[in-house]
Image: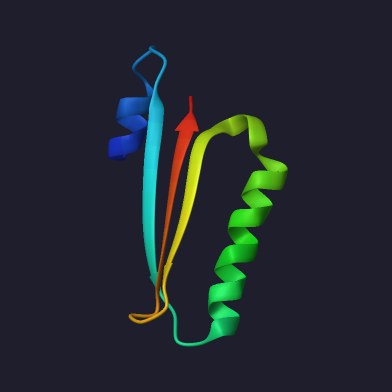
Length: 71
């Protein structure tokens, strides 16, 4: 059985795929690790995305990353 995204990817039309991930972190080191992952996306996949956001809520210890991919 195909996943939802696999089924949608088969439609032959230009699309933008939005992925949103919210992380709970307990230490600043974990927040830094998430930031490093986002930074690597920017460096290594610059032509593959239309937009990337990185929001930190230090009070609730959450990081939200949203990526809009070009496909």
